[in-house]
Amino acid sequence: MSIHHDLAALQRLTVHQLRARYAEVYGEGTAAGNRAWLIKRIAYRLQVLAEGDLSERARRRAAELANDADLRLTPPRAEPTPAQPEAPAPQAVAPPTLPPKDPRLPPPGTVLARPYRGETLQVRVLDDGFEFRGRVYASLSAVAKAATGSHCNGFLFFRLALNGGKR
Image 1 (tube, one colour):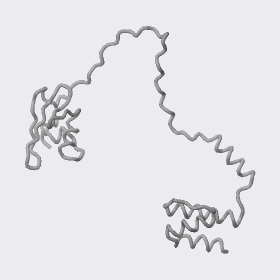
Image 2 (cartoon, one colour):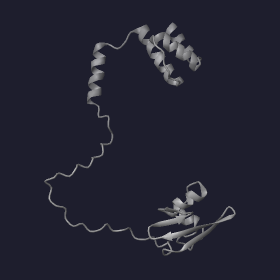
Image 3 (cartoon, helix red, strand yellow):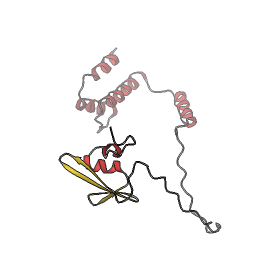
Image 4 (cartoon, one colour):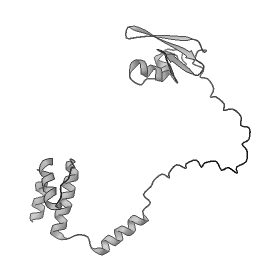
């Protein structure tokens, strides 16, 4: 009956007291500050001391199960292998095709202006990005985030939506 009383008493202890109790039952201190973890570890140790540990047969079975367990849920990414010196000469490769330009974007050179919090934000459309305050950004959303400090859709922020810019 005292093991049940000891386990119930653990719930009323503070983290500092649990660390002290941990040191009592394990013979060494811990730096852990997670109350739930300390309670579980101490409760396990108290039960082992009162009722005995796992049998050797149970330990062997647990080891067998651990060896058979397929712990990894996703396979590791294959790393590219270095090119071998005896590999054939590379064939002529076509230049990568650029994704089609978004129809909502105005032509390069256009300056988008948007009033925001008492100032007018100006963004210049480039061939490969957007210039805002001397920096080039890859997307209008990145510009909107730089301007506002929070993520928002760049097309909506600069009123370039497909419905004529109306929200």
